[in-house]
Amino acid sequence: MPRRDRPPSRLRHPRPAPPRQNPAAGAARRLHQARHRSSGACPVSAAAANPKSQAPEQKARRRAWPWILAIVVLAAAGAGGWWWWQDRQAAAEDAADARPDKQPAQYIAVEPSFVVNLADPGGNRYLQADVQVVSRDPATVDAVHAHLPSVRNRLLLLFGQQESTRLAQRAGKERLQEVAREEVRALLRSEGAPDKVEAVIFTSLVTQ
Image (tube, rainbow, N blue to C red; front, side):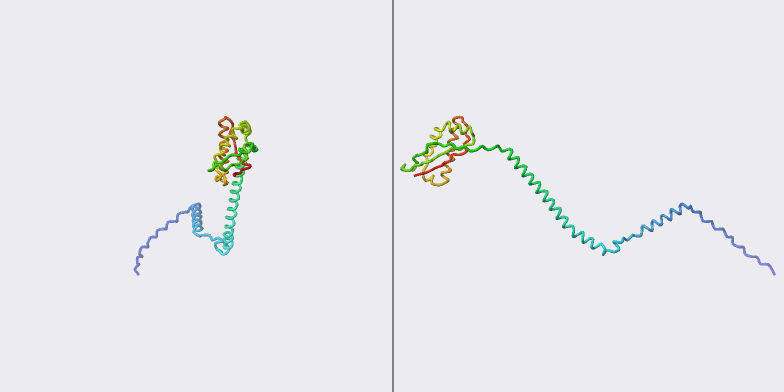
C-alpha cells in the first residue's frame, strides 16, 4: 500500500511561565483588600441595634434638664442679691463715716414775751408770743446771746407787720417762723457773726 504522508503537525509553542510574585507585595495586596472589605461594612453597635434600650435613658436626661436650669437660675439670683446687699451695706457705712457728728440743739429764749399790735384794719388786734432761737453751732449760740437786744428788735418789727387772718392758719404761722429765722440770720451776718440758725420757734402764740 502506498504510504500516505502525514500532515505536518502543528507546532505548539510553550506557554510562558507566569511571573513570579514577590511575597511581600502579595501580602501587602491581601492586607489592602482586607482593609477595603472591613471599611465597607458599617459596624452596628448594640445600642443602635436595640433602640428601645436607649429610650429610658434619654427620657431621664430630658426630665433632668428643667431641674438643672432651675438650680442654675436660683444660684445666679442668690449671688446677685448677695452682691447687691453687700454694696448697699458698704454705701451706708461710707455715708455714716462721711457724715459729721450732729451737735445737740440749743435753745435761746428771746425774753420777755412779745406783745405787739397787729396790722389789722382798725388796729384793735394784737399778738402775744414766746419765741426761742434754735442752733447747733456753739459760735452761733454765743453770737445770738451777744446780740439778743437787736434780735428782739428785729422780731418785734416783723410781728407788728402781720395780720390776724393770716396767723389764724397753720401755714401762716409756719411762714412767719421762716421769715423770723431769715431776719435773725441777716442780723448776725451784718454783725460779722456766724449765722447757723436752724429755726425760730414759738412756744406760745396768741392773737386777740
